[in-house]
Length: 456
Image (cartoon, rainbow, N blue to C red; front, side):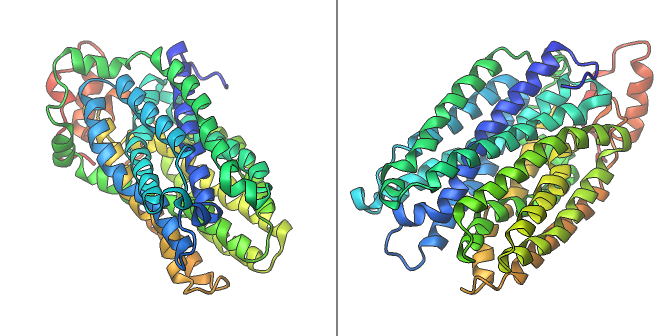
């Protein structure tokens, strides 16, 4: 990693966030790809709406995410980031492992998809608190001038998990159907237990950030973080929720995009290799985007990423519909690997910096997951928009582009925080000036650690 004045705890927090993100999105891609071409056969055989029902099981996790954000965020802001993040790991890892053990519809009938939905809800509950907690902890351990860089490792883990899952799926997808749809599809879900063990070991050794410990030792933690966040940070939460519409192309590409390319006659292994190339590009881009955001600010990097993704969406669907495989690789790499990676790299710092330490975990988690609900059901909405005609991709591309424009506008309304000290984040401008003056000679008054209106 690039030297940015970081401590051992900074690096450990970034590694913990990396591994947590890897586990979460290893599952994300596994489930998304399985929802496209495995689950319709295994859990919904014979149904005319098998693909739509399968996509709905993918989206149902997003309904549990806001609940996870509230519950896990409460414990993270009330008692500490570390234990809350240990809980998210265990819930996510064990639910993913159990999916690999589930019996099929042919074995136990309708109970099979019901169990699948139950495990998916647990995954969604866990995911509701993972990224916000990891982002909060990482930026709170990071030096002020490199928070976006270190925060980007949360999403680097996301990319690594997606890449790992895609690489695992390539030989799985190439299996004969009689093996793939019986036991072959189970292997990558069962293998997730390895990532869980490694991530849990690293996370156990983390320390709580000093800024949170100061709040806790003074007895100034929020009594009910959700209520305090809703009262004092509702503008920031709303802004995060709207900006998170940039997730729409992510879920579209991982679910609808896969099914669309296969329906156009492109081999599923080729589609997966395109995703591999894209994720490699993104892994290279994200840390650089984080460094750029630490130099020029969060807003310009996010906005360029969102608008660039919107433009390239039309290029990707056009290439796939024409069966132009080289162009599919290029447009996918530019859309997701370059532009979408700009947004992904900086949102951990960008979102977390909108709030004070008292309610940072809850506020970011709630805003993030409210915005994610739309993204989770985007593949199902896209399927309905095509009206059964796989060549009718223009409404889907327009939906994606529209979501990205709205996200960019929301980002432009945010305060620029790349030069704001950690202790002043989330405070009104007048209180920031008082904190800056107080820290030069004395402790910050306790009252200034509490949120005040107006905030965002």
